[in-house]
Structure formats: C-alpha cells, structure tokens
Length: 331
Length: 260
Image 1 (cartoon, rainbow over the protein chains, first blue to last red):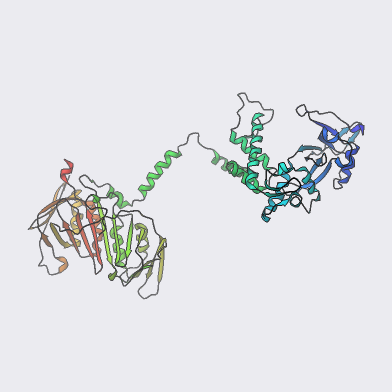
Image 2: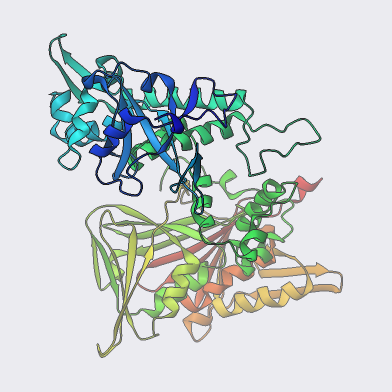
C-alpha cells in the first residue's frame, strides 16, 4: 500500500524508530480486533522497524491484544511481536479536529499510536500477587491466566524464567518451573529499576521539580533537582505500571516520604488562597528556639499561682529538706 | 482493689485544700494499714507528710499495696464537686490507670462519680526518724494562723524563740518590727484554747513566713497545732486529723551562719 508509506516527521533522537503507515499485512491483523471500529482500514503507528520487517511467517506476525493493565486493572491495548517474544504498550495520542494526509488521501482519524517496549514482568506481577494467597508454587501457565482477557496467556511466552525469578521464588528444572511471589525480591528489583530511571532523568537533566516550559532556558546554570527529587519522580513513573498497594510499598522501601503525594491529591481541588498563605514558610526557622521557650513555659505553667508566690520566697540559708532526712530508709 | 469510704467527706476537701498549694502532684501510698503521702514542694525546702489510718475510714479495703500518682489540682477540682455532707468513696482497681471518686449525698438521693487519670510519678521517699525535739509548742491552730498572717505584713521571715516563759514570734522589715509573745496557758477553760510548751532546751530559729502561711491552710482540719523545734533542724508543724492520723509539714530553718 504505497501511498501510506511515509517518512515525514522523523525524530532525530529516535533513530531506531520510524513512522510507518500500516501496510496490508498489518491491516489484516487489525481486522482481527473487531472492537476498534472507527477507521478499520488503517492507522498511523510509531513502530520499531524490526516489528514490521519480519518474515511474513503466519506464526510470528505481530498481534494486538487487550490485556489487563497492572495499574488500573482495566483492559488496555498491547502489541505482541516476534512470536510473542516482545511486548509493546500501545498509547493513542488523539486530538480532535485532526486528520492525516496520506499521499493523495485524507485519513479522517488523526490519532497517532505510539508503541513502547514494556517489561512483561510488570504485566504479570498482578497475577503473581493474586496467587500469593494460595502460598503454593505454581507454573507460569497456572498463574498467568485471566478469564476476561484470554490473550493473557501469551505473556507466558514473553516472560522468561530469568525475568520471573526477579519477583518470585523458583522451583523445578528446565522442563518445568514453578513460581511463588516473593515481595522482598520484587521490591529490590523495583528499587533497581527506579534508581536506573532516576539516573537517566538526572543524566538528561529533565526537570522534575515544578512545571515549566520545555523551551524555557534559565539564565543561570540549570537548577537541577536533588537526588531525592529524581528518585521520587522515577518512583512516580514506575508506579504507572504497579498496583496501588505495591506502589506505596515501594515508596516505603525507597524511603520516600508520602507527603508530596498528599499535595497532589489536594491539587485536584483548586487550592484556595488561604491554603497558599499557609504554605509559605519563613526563610529562617525560629521554631527550635521557640520550642525551648515553650517547654520552659510549660513547666512554669504547671505551678499554680500560689506556688509561684512560694518560688519567690527568699530561701537563703535554707537547706534542702532532703539534707535533713535520709532518702534511703522508709519509716 | 482499693476502696476507702469516708462518711465525713468534708475531711477530704480540707486535706486537699491544705496541701494543693504546696504540691502539684503527689503519690498516695495505700496499704492495709491506711493511706500515707509524702512529698516535697517544688523548691525542696519543705515537706508534707500525711497519714490517714485505715481505722479512721468507715470502710477500708486494700488488697495490695499500691501507690497512686495524682495531680492535686485535678483532685482538688474533683473534690470541689462534692457537697460538704457527702460521703466520699475513693476507689481504684489493682492495675487501673484511673482512680474513681464517688460522692453520695446524705439521703442517697444523688450519687456522682468522677474518674481521673493516675500519673506515673517517680519520687524519692525520705525516711523521717521519730526524734525528741528541744521544744514542743501546742497552740490553737487559729492563733498560729493569725500570728503568721500578721507577721507576714512586717517581714518575710519570722524568728521563733522558745524559752521557759513562753514562745515569741518576731519579724522585722522595712516598715519596722513586730513581736508576738504567747505565754503558757494550760489552765484555759477549753482544751483547744490552751498553749502548752514542753521544753528541754531553749531554741531560736528563723523561718520563711510564706511557707508557714501555706501550712496554716490546714487550720480547718484541727483546733490545735503542734510546733516541734530543735536547733538547726526542720520545724515540724503538725495538725491532728481527728481519730485518723496527722498532717505534718516540715520546713528547713534559715541558718544565719550559712550566709556569712
């Protein structure tokens, strides 16, 4: 389908990716997915070349499947490629009143599908966690099974033993492996992932603190966020693919305080001006001094008015009563 | 389980009024023989010792020795809720962290109970030996209160001189001096008006009047007060609690040689 072949809008930073119109082979696949009805003929995809340049072997053709998203628990579109060996997340970028020009044609549906490789372990994690209750070792086929999304079993081929042992205890030999979810292992695995993301964020100098335009250039040297901020941001990115519970567990595991997340939830309702005023903190912190004074005041306030009078008594020449009576023996 | 019932509930009110200004909190030690309390004021120059024997209560039960740390101003507030004619019962369970005060009106028409939290107090207990004092002066409690009040107008401290002839209280200050002499008067008609002096050796001691004024808050407890003195040891001001025990105050003397 030559008219659909396009090489415009090439993104120099993504050399390995190239925009491809869908050729006939792909369209055949699309027809399988009957629930995408808008424009059943063709879509615009951002794909890795290797996915489409495959031998047209029927078995190894890329397949779109609806799988359960680990974060939301709802269905989401994924792409299996290379005989289920690779899996890509499919994200649709859509704006209203947008269409594509393809050769001499206009395609009404102006949405752009972006595929990004995703670690299959994220997708199977919810199933491992679900089976944790049974406290038994099970094979991958037993664990990775979903009544609603029958294609889920494809994940068995995608996830290798080497990946799965990161999140589970393993038993058995090459022919038959059995797994059991291991939270400690999972968290340490996720920690490494998060740290790697944080490293990349820092390397690319991606602003993680506060929002500003990507084209905004600071006059001074770029104020980069602290390590903690990068880590928190990375945790947020990883959490996109984690069930809620595991995400908060990971936050604890990484030692990130939960306070900033609270702020985010508050931000859903537009903050009133009053709240903003409260957020303003003084540049100098007198609270420590104040704490001491308060303590003193407390111990003083404990005394009644009468006792205050007593404390003013001139006690020169008066010895402590305990110097007259021995404190040891009881009468 | 500890339970002490006192028909004369007003006595509790008087006792607390007598000590609440001197002490903020205190440990009440309860055992089968009764209730005792010993505590120093915040500046550690005076000491309160209260002893209420079990026989004095109308019902007294104490299965296990226990000590209750109580904030006295709270206790005072609670006891203010009791009527003067009320029967007061104080009780607590063995491992409880609260103490309950039950007030019953005389005709049992009204029963109120109050519960306050116990405190975990770490106080040292002083051993006070029973000693012979050089001078023991017994005088009407009201008289002593009057003397202390009057002399506190003159000065901050009082010099108590006890001789065979009698006992003299004197104070001096910016506006002048004041002396009050009490002669022995054992032959008074009423026993509570008698001034009795037992003396082995004459003593002269100086005390802070403000403390004595606080001690005289115990005046409603008893008609008579006993002052026991020896040179350079604390004064003992004792109020007898009728048929039950005593309330004693100890006050360190002001010693002149310390100043020099």
